[in-house]
Length: 297
Ligand code: ADP
Ligand code: ZN
Image (cartoon, rainbow, N blue to C red):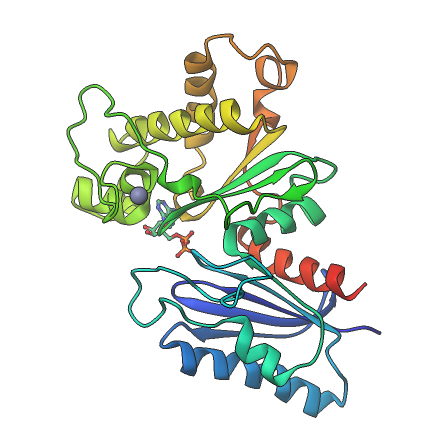
């Protein structure tokens, strides 16, 4: 049986696994995101140890990492993080340490594109050619598939930093160190906590924060519909555990679009247009696995 390696690199932990398929995971670990050398050696060791203990070679590795990252295969910094404000991690090589140790095909993506690939392979975007996956958690990120390909362009999309107009009655200046009142600046867990003075988990369903949150997410959804013409939008991440946001976002999106996009997918079937991830919290991990399986084939 062919075995594959997968890495989901996040700001707090790197999830790694070895598997033969989605439903056959052979080994799994979580490595804290401390310093690049430390974290990446632990990732390499995890796979090396698996190979030794099982006397079996890993056929390929897929890596989906927090960004911004360099996805340009011609670039000398391909496989590296670029400009993160996260201490120690700017310019950190992610793919490099793995390439040094394992001479196998590898694929590299920014985390949200990885989640999108997971959803496309086994989740809520199966069979689609154009869709967007957003995560709304510690940060906001958006990964897009366009015409059957993950959107890279210059690097990858950064939809989490689209600017947000100030909704009437809201004077919160926003939390993004780069742009203030961008999507990430108003809609993440940390920005909600900063705005309202306690963790979002403790708000309760009637808290006024949710009306505003749904409004801002609906604005981002409208922008996304207009800019990328997706067949579906998946909303994941910690904040979207607040499932009551889904009907609010759908209603507000319809209201804001105001009948302009005359498609039955939106006008008649909005419940299947704005959806939670089919793979839940495993979208990123499964995406990295799907990338490994594809690059080995
Ligand atoms: P990350 O973005 O770091 O990968 P998550 O997507 O889990 O991780 O996002 C974590 C953020 O989501 C935290 O800021 C937390 O406040 C927020 N969060 C997690 N669960 C909930 C919840 N049930 N309700 C509201 N916010 C939540
Ligand atoms: Zn921003």
